Image (tube, rainbow, N blue to C red; front, side, top):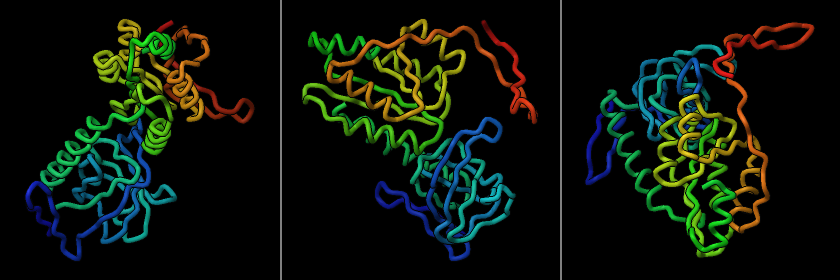
Length: 278
């Protein structure tokens, strides 16, 4: 069995030899059909279907596990990578995970980790509203901080983009702040946060949902889309240095949802869609 205890303000876990499964999250993403999917590497113990686990700030029970060939497995031992389904949210690449005795313990550990991470993000004020507006305001001395929200398709890409942005060297009078980062589509809550903090949203291989797009249009929130990290870095760096070149505006002519993909030997993949707007 595993028992949890409090030592000061820290949570500790006592594991028995037969259930001390621990490891690290290599990658994670939000799958439309399966929810949060994390690729984890078991470092010690054995992970089994039904185990209560916590990975970073995510928690839950192991609902399913897939091996490197996409086949279902019921347990995984040391040095074995598996895809785990059943977590409450998407953990970050590099997060440690462990097995607990029950869901409540996993949730408590996750909430504690989330609080620590939130405090660290608030304390982070490194060199860091459309970018063009920021450039003009910077030249006029009306702004001192550029606030960014980063959303991406996988946690590894989000972390890489954040780390690269924080390494941009600019004048000490200007700050670059990452106020939020996450995995998945850009949501209405992201737009609301950008509205409150006067931030710019960077989408890396993701797009906003319909509500988020409408909200951003009403509030005038600048959302930038990128598929190459260097393009995002170049835009942000040029903006901070007052050298951003004018860009063409992306105009949405319609939205279509892919319902099914058909495979044709003659034409390749054919998307069966329904037009939602436009």
